[in-house]
Image (cartoon, rainbow, N blue to C red; front, side, top):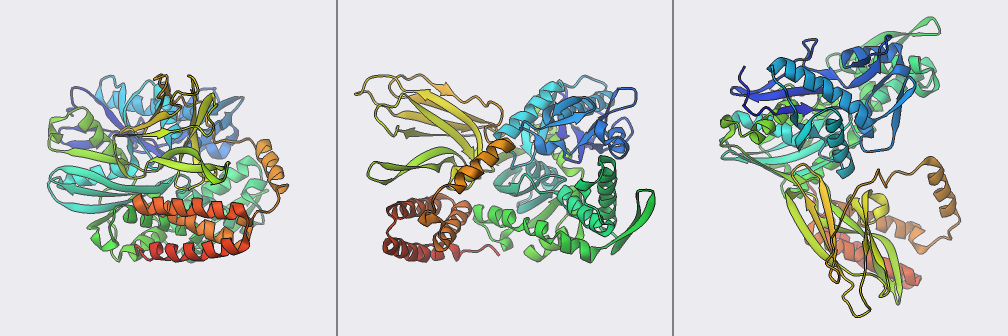
Length: 571
């Protein structure tokens, strides 16, 4: 086959399976691994001879040698979590690099040339730390990341290439092993434009498997985490197989050996749907949010595309069908489509002549901002509020700036705490970094700081802060994951919170109103979002004065305003 002179590969680095593809003269092509399979299980382990195993060989040893094998590590990308194989501990970036290294070797064997550059897909809802961890994993594997591409965007590229001159608006529902993403795209005259993205970075097919494993354990009188690692691994593998069987059959049965005795377990599709219904319900909000952010209604969508192996579950397809009153498309294998789309993006990056008429745009899938303080009384400030800089679904690349002033005239520095999320309070968002900015100069100097956020097409954020007095720019450096707390610190904070006296905010009616405002804030954008943000700040100020009559009146007025905002529903 003929590959472009500058060879970039496209990689789908998945929670359960990973794939590699390349864009050639006749379009994107999947590359088989050394076993001839397109899917390489995202599993790593040691063999009996001490050699490192990747893929199917490692996955098979999950059942027999769970102490020597690791899987599902994608969910730990960008955290300090380590998984132990034998006597050695590995971070998720290191384990992912072994998978990437194997895919790189498969591509080089297939193409007959060295490959050192790639486009790698990531969940749309991966934060800045997770994206940088993915780039680090690639670096460990000897690959330069040309670009990170959001998984639903990659899937849309694969589908859009089939009808590049057509005009349509389509929604991609991507439910993989560990993550869930939704994107809305418009295709016109070879231009593919992402309108909106939403998702959940901790929701996927593996959660359905876990729920089924718990149910099978109930039938056996055991808990999956209350048995040996070997038995737990076998039980989970059985649950995974039965989950797959239920995509075609109404019932699945199997024998499970426990303490030398074969025990029969059975699950019907109806029972499976019942135990996984809470997981299924979590799919609705990101879908509705993406449509709302794109200023569309369900009827405005021409095509509904399902991506990811977990969308094969009948309950998932039925949910999508009910929401949109039409059957979703899956003409391209759901397991393959993201890798094929990543290969198309690789072809675009390599300026392949077959893609001269294709243009791709993308958006920032989440809101980026920093912690700020709001005045709630004379000389009194409440900390912990979120100030958005780049709102979700802003077209990228993008750069925005704002002027920030210190709270006190004699401050020697400003500490910017950088967050990603949709909550008006930073404690409910994800901290992705900190930036200390020294404030120099005399009392008469301007103490303000110009803060700038720049978000690129790979979804990596740069933050710059420039004091107007010194003109010396400070740049954000991510160090570990500031949002991760150890268990002893969590327990310490819980005890400290228990000792705090009850504030009016914690009264039932006030707590309900705050929760309602936060939900509205998360789902709105632009002027409406700013209005709700002001309502939150105003109510905070009223509660700080602790006058029950004033609080009740403010609550009544705010509920009326919120009711007007909430009448616009997608479905």
